[in-house]
Figure 1 (tube, rainbow, N blue to C red):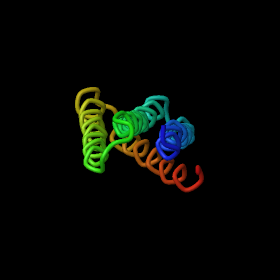
Figure 2 (figure 1 turned 90 degrees about the horizontal axis):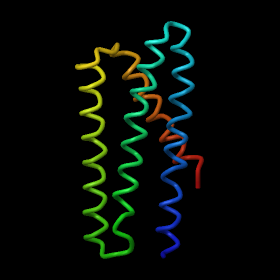
Figure 3 (figure 1 turned 90 degrees about the vertical axis):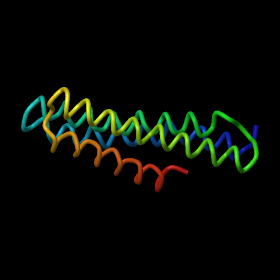
Figure 4 (figure 1 turned 135 degrees about the vertical axis):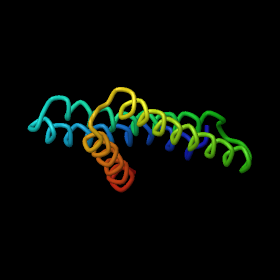
Length: 122
């Protein structure tokens, strides 16, 4: 196995953990307002965490291959990530009727965790 491939595979769960931690911190802030708001933040952040894990799984599933294989894996993984987020937001906000602001705050908090994770985790 390639060193870069092994390193990439090990980064995915660490970045997902950083996203989960920032989501939990945001949920604690919203817990001061109400428990449903805190749950909505957790659901919004969970959508991003699941999307990141799906992207990482698909990105590194093919192993070492050609540049075309790597590009296809990345594009399929990114599509899976966006579909997860779009369907999840539809279900959480549209079907389950959680409040919009806490859900979107959870998504933003998890995205901030992604940027913190990619900046701090090597």
